[in-house]
Image 1 (cartoon, helix red, strand yellow):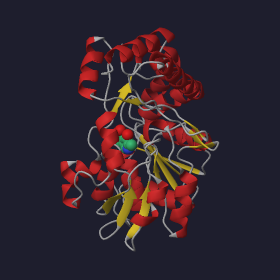
Image 2 (image 1 turned 180 degrees about the vertical axis):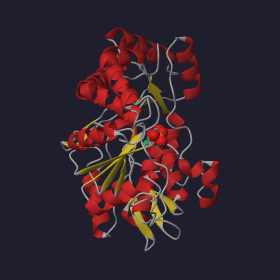
Image 3 (image 1 turned 45 degrees about the vertical axis):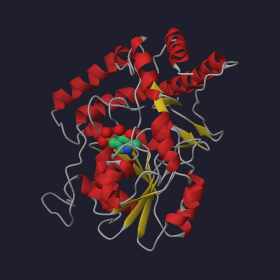
Image 4 (image 1 turned 30 degrees about the vertical axis):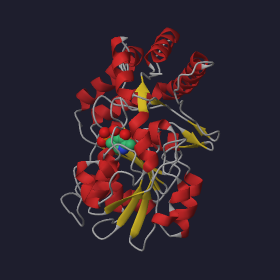
Amino acid sequence: MEFIDLKSQYRRIKPSVDARIARVLEHGQYILGPEVQELERVLAKFVGTKHCVAASSGTDTLLIALMALVIGAGYEVITAPFTFVATGEMIALAGAKPVFVDIDPGTYNLDPARLEAAITPRTKAVMPVSLYGQCADFDAINEIACRHGLPVIEDGAQSFGATYKGRRSCGLSFVGSTSFFPSKPLGGYGDGGALFTDDDALAKNMREIRVHGQDRRYHHPRLGLNGRLDSLQAAVLLAKMEIFEDEIAARIRLGARYSELLAEAFAGTDRRVRLPQVEPHNTCVFAQYTIEVDHRDIFETRMKSLGVPTAVHYPLPLHLQPVFRSLGQGAGAFPVSEAAARHVVSLPMHPYLTEDDQATVVAAVRAAVVT
Ligand SMILES: Cc1ncc(COP(=O)(O)O)c(C=O)c1O
């Protein structure tokens, strides 16, 4: 069994992928070609924002958004410590200080109840992460940020396609960022990412920063980077968008089914697993289907011996990463994130999981959990 099966998906969309790739090879505009513009139109419509700026990765999109908001040395950006390193890393790379706020234990996302206390006169933005495919509580976060005049940047790398109160991830705040890393809910065949906003000036700035801060050919009023998306990746993503709604429905269905099967498997036993909690106002696209167990190392070893791959997202919160040691926050600073990092483990999850696959995974979890 594979943790994420990209081959079944390719077999399904092969004619469209192959034809679209062939068209790129024919016209030869490999960088920011017509497919990129088409993709930006399709994605902006899907998310419901005025603008989409496609870029080279979900890491670069975070940096581009921060640069466009002129966030650098002397400023602070608030984010959650329980995330992939890129979130905090790009804040620091932009020159600002990441300020962490602990997560809500139910959703693993930035806890709005703790946000206001972290705001200082140096705070320049709030960057919540929509982890595992479920959006953070954006109404609550936007309300606090708005009172303090702060823009909110959603790191929606894992939540593309998810909804919050009926609205799409990446369209829930001033600017949304996502990743098209191959294993993401909408993944390419290489690196890619995109930014979303309704703000004309911000979109213009992000477009310029994407191409070395250039406003016209070889004229550079500001610093930028090489953050461009390849036409070949855009071609692949356009083919995947043809089936994306269907894949989202499958992810939602399979996530719910995992939870039902696991609840049944553990009913009446003294074994403990904690299942994902999806807020009633959210739909989760399950970039990861993540449970919590005790004695995770033994659990993972047993799962491996039963032929079921697992992964840990993420074993160390950002404040405990060596790279952020200089921030001076040791163990105990963010107890909810630290507890999650000790117990979380993700199960195989992708839209092509069969009922038999899920039954196999659930039986393995039942056998592998340490009493
Ligand atoms: C929460 C989060 N932010 C940012 C990124 C970075 O995206 P990319 O790998 O496309 O640079 C990822 C990807 O793993 C992610 O999970």
